Image (tube, rainbow, N blue to C red):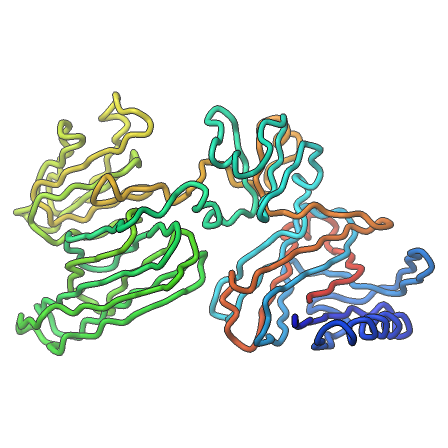
Length: 466
């Protein structure tokens, strides 16, 4: 049976006792209850006196929230399978959201309780699988059809949509798909792996060079939506000197069974001041793998990079690797010396490229630092857009008139609000599996980003987390 966690904001001793008693009387016969008595105020809030007559009930007192950010935690239940947030508050704010995390070291993952610009829309609205689609003019009968046939000539806005949840709509798992990267990488690097479904298996091969003193440890970590899913540490090979001695390559694995669909961030970080080690091979049982930022290719061999980014940069530290890069097998990009980081604007160099085509950049000699303004891959088949959906992320900076005039579709996870006697009421469901809630506490962050611009306080009539 579900466990229920209740945070009670006291409306007054008598009223609070009556409500609690009625709740427990009902719950006693229906489900197991765990009661967590909260202080009469949230941290950074204060009580106030108000008389709100609702039907035949007189509510005395409430909360006045005066901080933009309010942190609190509750004890976690081992059998927790749902978290429900119910909150009543007075109108006047632009945005109210709540973040959840399982450990204090994790970032908060947010869902919105209220976003004025969307909650005020009068457009046609449909919902499916937790996604809500607003259409200025009704064109689609369900959200799935919209995602499969998104109009390229219409402007789309998204608000608090975890794009990982959209991956199954755009990509299908191919049988026996895999990516093998044999290009040696020296130093830190960041890759992004697209997982439509199934298991995620990553095999990493590391070779220490031992041309400098000191141990060489490679740490590889896998995160999804900012939450660490798995990590592995590949130790030094046993030669912590500059003898140039080498052992057999070290091979370690990161495996996730029944991986949640999404874009996984794979970080490689060397615990070595001299980067005295090389990732010689990466094997992944997925088709789509790209790199972000920049990395050092350590191979002295021709190497191809593929990207949609128009901005790239390249440099080398070795005189023998001064070279001309080729773009689409024709235009030259000159790396002229070993002291300069060269930047290039490919849009000015290649003027006849189709919008959806990739740029191919060839390094004939290798041994270069290469990076882009976005992402790149080592094969055209591996490339994908990490953003998943081409849409503008909405923030409180956009006003209502501009949103209604300039956008055609809004995709969100925001639950429509209700109104109850001058109060706005929001209900929000949170799936514990999205937050890696494995500890004995659940941490919350209640945030009102523009509180200081909207009166400096939020009147809360009640909040329940169950």
